[in-house]
Amino acid sequence: MNFELKALTAAAAAREKCDLLLVLVSEQTALGSDAIGTIVSHAVKQGDFALSCGKQLALYQVPAVAARRVLLLGVGAGSARDVRNALQGCAAALKAEGLEKAALHFAFEADAKAVACAVQTLGDATYAYTHTKSQAKPLSLKKVTLGVPSKTAAVAAAFEIGVAQQEGVAMAREWANRPANHATPTMLANAAKGIAKAARMSCKIHGPAEVAKLGMGAFMAVAQGSREPLRFIELHYNGGAKGDAPIVLVGKGITFDTGGISLKPAAEMDEMKFDMGGAASVLGVFQSLAKLQPAINVVGLIPACENMPDGAAVKPGDVVTSMSGQTIEILNTDAEGRLVLCDALHYAARFKPAALVDMATLTGACVIALGGLRSGLFSANDELASALQTAGDAAMDPCWRMPLDDEYADGLKSNFADMGNVAGRAAGAVTAAKFLQKFVGDIPWAHLDIAGTAWKSGAAKGATGRPVGLLLQFLLSKAASAKPVKTAKVAKAAPAPRSASTRKRAASTASKAGA
Image 1: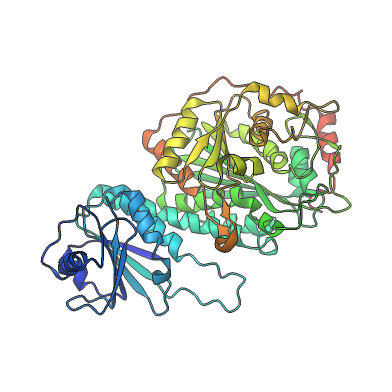
Image 2: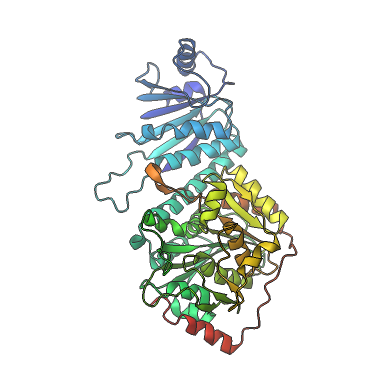
């Protein structure tokens, strides 16, 4: 979608040549004697239209208005949330056949946040999945012009961020929506390579041999039951000063999750193609960074593989050795996301990050706790947690901080390894986070459980692209402040040194990884 920002008065908006003119009218709008003001005043007086949020009035070939169709939208107080709610209700109008150019006119002084939100909402409303639909027609809408009364520097900057964010969200939605046979680990790696062609970016792909050499026994154990070879994707964006500590983002990339030997029920298993929502969000963030080019260094890590019940698959009761040297008893093969993440989190330490954030469709327990509104946020670092929560609120991609008390880790104790990979049903989202915490040491770290927010089920089934908005806002805030996150005292993982024999044991645990 091509977006354009213009300074437009109500009179100029009436002259804007387009197929559809959306007019956002707030309760504070001062209606003039121009064509649009006259129409709105008359419609309100006759009771055909109201300025409260969500009200609509569709008009056709209005005299003195160049647009073929006009849609009046009430936005209440005119806040960003009101703008979003109003625009979400006109998705069908934007997807109508023959509609090639649309204009959105703010009939009031919109703030920067409302403008950015309008772009994002229009992007969401006009997204359509077509990759595997042979009869799908491409969206006819090619351009949307946003008209604001005053094109200030703040509004222009917010517009650019909004455009970049909606591109990143669309990227994340597209890859998460694709079926597993159209979004294999190799395909994800190729997508990362494509993004990395942008300025200040680079990409490194680790295959099965390289991952085995690194000693990522937990990651390899998950992949060993699949015929699709694993890929460990490493993206770099170098927009900050050389030597500045990067922010590292780690996204769970299980391109399909059967549950392995601990097989999932057949009902709704097709939705397990969305289990790489964390990986998709990393790709989406880097797509946005490529467009905005902010002054910050960012590393993206994606451990990508399938979790399948092959004869070579890891079994309940098996013990594997992670890259950190810590051993893990596999009590449930369907708790595989934490296994691929733990090796990626340990790998991330080599970049000496200012902050480390992972995002994963990790637990059904988080869905029970928070539903589909807020992502679960886990962190022992108050400053980092506050920054992420603030970013989520600003991007209208909210999260909610969950506990990380040390006692929650008691259930991970094992008689046969350093830890088990599950700790029972109680507080499942918390114990999963406690498992990951064992692999981050004293790095400022946060975990986002997006199992309830990365996709929707039912009639609206599809990926949401979350938490791209939250992460992008967090990174841009860090770039603007250039203030490093302070290190908090958290429980350190203290594995034994990695000897040659330990590495050999880790590699042999899953020697068929990716085969």
